[in-house]
Image (cartoon, rainbow, N blue to C red; front, side, top):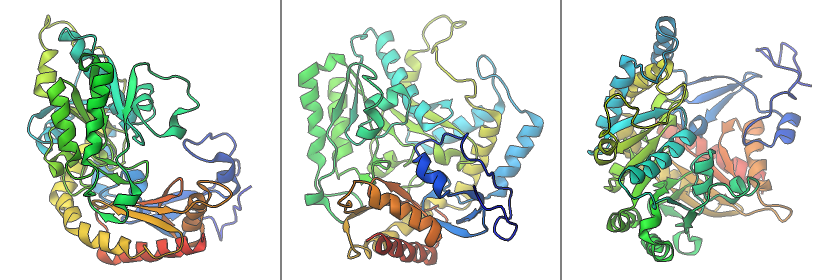
Length: 448
């Protein structure tokens, strides 16, 4: 039972935590020592006992513009009072078309159509379904195989889980989708340790796609989906030349290439989308999280003209793609998205992220001599710090770090196994970067 005394809890705190089965959470451990949040503003969360935690994680890779942006909340409130809901099947709202146009304008030329959904998981499944349907209507229905990557994360739908390559996310859910294979991970600690930005070593990992083509036959493979930076597995940047090589191989064999930019989209790597940073045009690109600054659920898929137009050939009164969600392009999410894009533009946050990257990297790398640090990787305003596992269990040191950060050092970070992930909002200042590094150093020493 939580202490509800007024001196410690300025908000109404529930005294029964049993009913809520929390996602991706060690529920029993959490409920013994809850990490409860009551508010957020700019670079900080506020706990139920009134403490300010500096946000080293942008919530969950979401709040790129920081917290409590009244421009966004006002837009949501105004929309809720005007139009709370509109059916997205056979009806539309002006804000959805405006938002789609603005997102397409930010994307690399050629990705001109947006299909909205409500999360990164739905975006990944949507992109995979579009890929399968595209080949089907082009008379290449044998192209049904989907290729992901070891250590990849594409959400928790059946499609995204199947192409995902994080063992713990897959192993208890049976066989998942048939006809799925995986490229190798792009990480080799021996040759890439303590890299700022994209590793020099590793472009050849893309050549494994040729092996899969030889194994299965190009005419059976529909699409390859990869993250330009694999975030959920602990921040693995694509090696230099890797994505261009993957694009060359997919084009050679008529295979669609999907970039999962749910994490990397909207400024995390210093550009609107990582595809621009790497000079690679995928056939589809998924987004979510930062599109609304986390203020409302929204995701989507950017699609090339050639794919979109292939669906627009039947009778005009017929549905071209039998896919969608009750809350696709929800009015409140569209309002949040438009207000968020205004902030990104007006405050030049993508450019700010780009300029801060080298200073952020230098600051994070100063932790390399802390106890049990095996590797540090940085790219954009993102870092992964690998800690040596404890002798009595993998992930215990990382979990201890998560708890120590919250309860003892007033910082929010993410723990992925024994990796501490840092992804602050793009509004972070140089002084706040220094504060984050100082607090993370204390956390690392506390769990040594």
